[in-house]
Length: 111
Image (cartoon, rainbow, N blue to C red; front, side, top):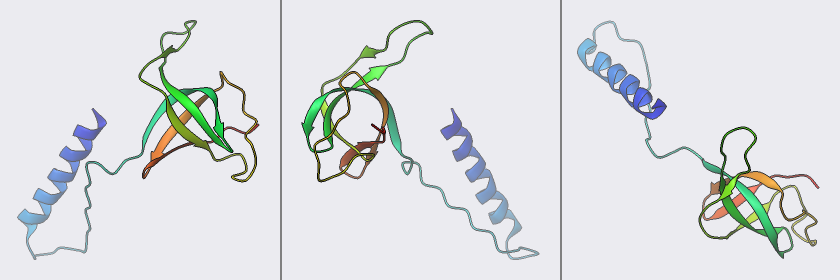
């Protein structure tokens, strides 16, 4: 819903700039990029893969008092809170928010 509002606001701003033309305009920049936001979702750590890389599974958060439900298949994600050169110490069953950055999935959970 907020994406639609952002696009509408951006379109309105561009239309106003076009109508004004060069008369009395000050410098204004408007940049829109519909797909340039970070993708994030809740995950549950299933096991350690190697170093600070874990096998995780996405979860769907339900109503208060209910357990999250695992969805989709397992994927690998890097815990940025741990050393890249040592074996990770994070316990299976830990929940985190995972972000997709480039081709990698990352999360930050201190041990």
